[in-house]
Every structure is written in structure tokens, then in C-alpha cells.
Amino acid sequence: MVTTVGLVVNPAAGRDIRRLTGGASVSNNYAKRRTAGCVLAGLTLCDDVEVLVMPDNAGLADRIVDDAPSDIDVSLLEMPVSASARDSRNAAEHFESNADAVVVLGGDGTTRDVAQTIGDVPVVSISTGTNNVVPTPIDGTVAGEAAGLVASGVVPADEATIRHGTIEVEVEKETGTSEITGLATVGILDRAFVGTRAILDPDDIVGGVVSRASPAEIGLSGIAGGLVTHRPDDPGGVGFRLDREDSAGTLVRGITVPGTLSEVHVADYELLDDGAPYTFEIPRGVVSVDGEREHEVRNGVVTLRPVADGPRLVEITSVLERATREGYFRD
Image 1 (cartoon, helix red, strand yellow):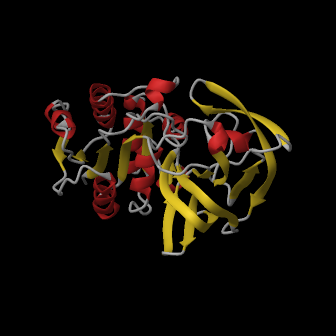
Image 2 (cartoon, rainbow, N blue to C red):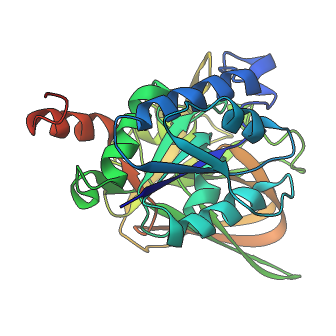
């Protein structure tokens, strides 16, 4: 029986302004192609694996297919290309019913786009973005091995994945109501326009809700992680508001941007149950989703709810250790 693995490589990931203004990592298309090649090499650990690669307008997917190892079947997924986030969602929608696992090379935004349509298919997310919380900074060969082991059923998916939380956003304005979905973080910023998209100044942050919190993470989840820890698969999330005027409240130190250790004052925070609302009234501001400014708001109300219905993320190290215990790497 043939095992199918989907491969999503976002050529636009890792290109925002934080590469120039801070210590954010850089991942150009050459590096992504090399990482994808390592993923394919790792997948050769398992027999009878075929790989479908999401096409793109940068020629990256074509090079990945051309350079693929000869002992694995790799081809392009047939789909239209829009050079937008819609490509990741469309590819994931196809993989939801036609793949046994999916490997994603990108940042938090790419993983979020895939998560919206991937359903219960196990996802291996590799960091090739700028300022990531969800994707794992790991060698592509190791990630490919884990993806193959889960996709082929050597390690059962139910025992190899966690269900990551998400954040539902409802924006009520005079012009109507809109909905957005975040994966790890949704923030409210005191900014007039989306602009360069990246969050560069911690003084802009009004507050937000995160589905995970740890001092080892960067951005909003790192701020919340200075108050309390919240695992990605714990139900609910953490909501917080900053005191931006009087410098009162709890002083929290966190890494808000790569290379920048900041001090912020938290006016209040709350551990939120699954589906519990956390509301902001905004005369003027911007909603940021997973580290990028997305949605401008004027005289509106934004309600954030953490929900435990996100993607099934593969725990790579646990998968490989399980395979070792069962003797898979030994003859």
C-alpha cells in the first residue's frame, strides 16, 4: 500500500522586515530547497512513500521535484497558483482527503493557513519563517523520518500528535462583523494601519489572547509566558492587557522581537477556559494574528476565544524514540 505525504513549502516565509531590524533568522529559497531535500531523504526511511509538492510561482517546488532522490516518487500537486496564502489552504484541502501526513516548511502564518483546511491529517511543521512559535527548528531529515513513520502507521498518529489550540476572533464594526482565526497568538495593537505587518515595537501592544504561553517563546506568547505557562494542547488560553500609560501593574520581561529583551507592564491577565471570551473595545487599532498585523479596526469591539480545535501536530522526538523502542531502526 502506497503512503502519501504532502509537502507545503512557502516561498514567501521568512522575508519580513524583522530580518533587517532585529536578530530574526533568515531562510531564503535556497535554504528552503535544501531543507525540503532533507525531508525527502528522511522519508526514504519508509517503503512505498509518494510525495505531492504544492506548486508555487517562484519555481521552488519545481526544483524540489527535480532534485528529489531517485528512490522516492515525488511530483507536483495539480492545482492553480495564486501566489497568496490561498495556495497553502487549497493544497491542505486536497491533502485532507488524499494524504496520510503533511510536512510544512514556513512560519506560524503558513502553519495556520494549512491548519484551516487540513482536518485531522498529522502535520510536521518545520520553521523556515522569521519569528516562529509553532513550527519546530529541526533538521529536515529528522522531520522527514518522523513524517514517514506516522504516515505509514509505524507509529500510530493518535499516539504521535497533539491537538494544538486556536483562537477565534470576532470583529464587530459599524460596517459589519468579520471573523479571523489565529493559531498561537492574537494581539491588539495601538496602530492606525497594517503597514509592514511585523510587530516591531512592544509599546504598540494593547493586549491579546494566546493559545500557548512560555518564557521560551518570542512575542505575545512569551509575554504571557512570563506570567504563567500554558501548553499548546492545554484547553483554553491566556488573555492579558498591558498598562501602557502609568507603567503600573506587573512588570514582565520577555523577548518581544528576536534580539530584543523588553519590559512591559501587565495590568491584568486571565486563564481562559475553552471558548471563553476576552473582549477589547477599540477606538483605533490593528488586530495581529500569529505575529503579523492583519486587520484594521475603527470604533469596534474585538472578542477573542481560545478553542481546542487546531491541527494535529506531530511530536517529532517522541515518534523517533517510539520507533527506536520498537526496534524499527535495527535489522
